[in-house]
Length: 495
Ligand SMILES: *Cc1c(COP(=O)(O)O)cnc(C)c1O
Image 1 (spheres, rainbow, N blue to C red):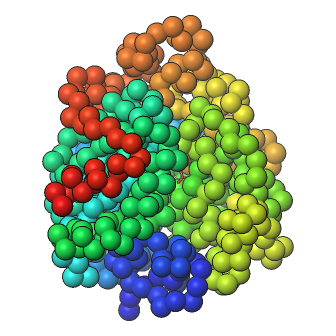
Image 2: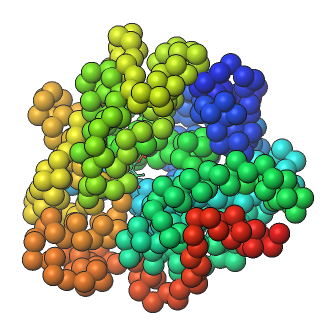
């Protein structure tokens, strides 16, 4: 029997996994949620003997039930290969009594690679299964990180093309260099003379352009999105929590069934929701600790039951968490509302009209396993420095936010359960903030000098992703106004 997926916003017909992956968002604007979270079928002893790829198959087959064994294994082996710089894919590193789950060993040295390296394969397999003959064209607006991770994931994947729009003067020099040097004949990177909102609005218009959709269909193309709400991104993220626990057990770090806590630096709420799914599959996770930066909407939400986006947006040193609307939270709202789509739709409608909603006491009670807190900019920098001075281990700013919150939780509760902390980016990705946290003297150095200095200090080789952009040739130099986006897309597709 297939596991089916329902929209969080209406009682429309449920769909199979491959259909949910193809659609991304449901027609009513809702997110797809599995009708139930499947339990693990293998024992901890068995899981502890598995490679990352084998674990991925064990977990994903329970969610993506309309994929054949051969299809899913093919997707997994194409995703988790030597694009990662370590065979274990997601290493666990112990520092100062915490287990850092390093999710940054993929092509763009951040955790988005964990899902975006497999999504393209899940997507084209889903297209084949549903007799979609068109080539899939991924269209994305990016403020930096997701664009590069999507480009790296889709580059040279047959049956797909990817077009990324970024604000020409709105990303860091390293981020821009990463994108414009992207290889792959199916990739196309365009700078917009405008800001991120212009790029995003333009992309949304293209998605909604019926006339363009018809012309594209005639020429054998259709748009799709690599957005973080796609279940094809959520499901692969469940894998590493199962894998991490099995590794701890294998290495004798936890007893069988010993409960651990998980700490996740959170923005869109996708990563921590994956941990929640892992817990519901049977992994003994006690607390799900949600760490925010100064954009602490989620902390306030877990404290009060009120989600309120009406506040100032703060630019922090952990930019991938600078978010005021955590889209994946909608899935938790729906589930704790008793899988009641009408109730959830009312909350989401309040969020889009007045920017605020308040959940019921009963729903809050069901979120008891979540704990939220946040880190200030100062606390974040201090945590990087303190951990480095104590252990020599260097973490990035996002991971440091989680480290601060982990400390606050322990102090507040006295809970000393072992902790797996999701380490979401390599310190080489946010070198300047990291080095400045360690010592202000580094601020005078150039970006690449800082990279070399960090390598010496942390005793870690400069990651390939950074090495490459030092010398890689610029392959994309298209710049356009937002009014020209449609023309640019049509030209790239040759229509
Ligand atoms: C995207 C991202 C996050 C936030 O993850 P969510 O799933 O959106 O909560 C945290 N850290 C880094 C480095 C990221 O790129």
